[in-house]
Image (cartoon, rainbow over all chains, first blue to last red; front, top):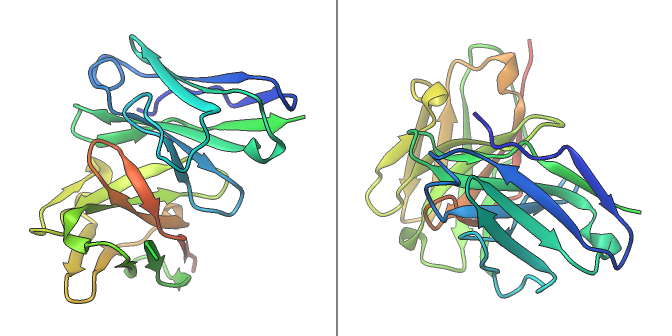
Length: 110
Length: 118
C-alpha cells in the first residue's frame, strides 16, 4: 500500500514547513532509499531529495530530508511562492513492488 | 541536453493496446534503467515497471505483470512500454524516468496522456 502523507500543508513566505511520509518496516524503516519529488501542475515530477537526505546539485539547500524509524520528512525553509506544488515521497520496498509512492501533499504558500 | 522525450497523446478503446516511447538523449542510455510511472487525473504517482537498458531485464508491479511489455532499442536510445487489454481505469499520464536504482528517478519525460474510452 502507499506511503502516508498529509493531504495538504501551508505556510507563508519565509516560514518553514515539514511534510511527513509514514511507511513500514518493509520500506522506509528498512532502507535509506527515500526520495522526494516536486510536481507543479501539468508538469513532470522533479527529484528534490534522494537517499533520505541528499540533494541534487541544482536543488536549493532550503530543502532538506530526514528519517526516523518508519517516517521520513521533507523540510522546506524560507518558503518561496514558487515552492507551491505537490510533493511526493517514495521508498524502495522489500515487498516485491520495488518502489512505492506516498499519496502526495499539496503545499500552499499563502 | 540531457532529456527524455516521450511520444504523444493516445486515445484507445477498451481492450486495445497502447505503446508509448521514451527517447533518451544527452547521456549514455545503457548506463541507467528506465522506470515507468503513471498518474491518473488528480491522483498520485504509481510505479508500473522497470527495464534494464543494459540487458533487457524487467520488473513489474504485480497488478501490471500480465499486461505490460517493455522493450528497448539501444541503437536509438529509446525505451518502449506497451500496455495491453486497456480498461477505462488505465486512463492516466504515463511518465518514463531514468532510474538510478532504489527509487531514485532523477530525470523524467514530459509524460504521455493515454485515454481509454469507447
